[in-house]
Length: 304
Image (cartoon, rainbow, N blue to C red):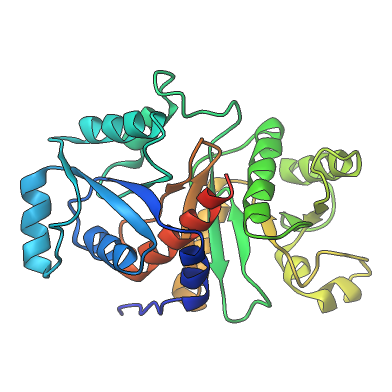
């Protein structure tokens, strides 16, 4: 069954107010990629530079009825050359964001992390899945569902800091953070529960600024104030989380995709923690999802 993703005019209009984002499309030879780029450029969201095999890009554009004549095309034959070109241009401040198109994620991120290009900020790269789900009271971020496989406590600190910086760029001054686990009890058999308690202690000490951090919390507690009341848990997060910190990449990825395919959720995906945001979502996503992710990245990049 083919999913239909409607456009979110609110996010698009908000991104347009920030001006046109200079966008490096790493791996532009893909029909969904080109469609999203053309739409985003037509809406005034981005000014794209297409990077990849020029003949393939033009052939796909003709086949899809997409006019790319006004977009610069940098002819690069393979993925390493595409990735290094994107990283080099970004290092010269010639872009506001990078879009991962038809290119392997590890190849692109290897170039982004290459010390020659100076795109690292001293922290950790992590993934944000920005979710808009009809059943939820408001949008929220799931992290990390796409980068760090099994984060340590130290990595979770950095992932959470990245997410807080992201929500700040989205205009959320005091984000509510749910540290997800199977339940609210600390158990040596579930390391994420003990790590959640330590993250809460750090939050109380001011490590995460004004963020309200609670955990460990089961998913029902995060989204239901009634569940919190029944369990006798006084919570400032329950029912209205802004950030969900998941135990590992598997749980985050499964949860995010479950919301998309089973709960009519809309996902926008970014890698944060570098000098500029990187649009990164599944290659199986539709052009509208790419468009929303570009709009999200444009909003975030304007706050850098």
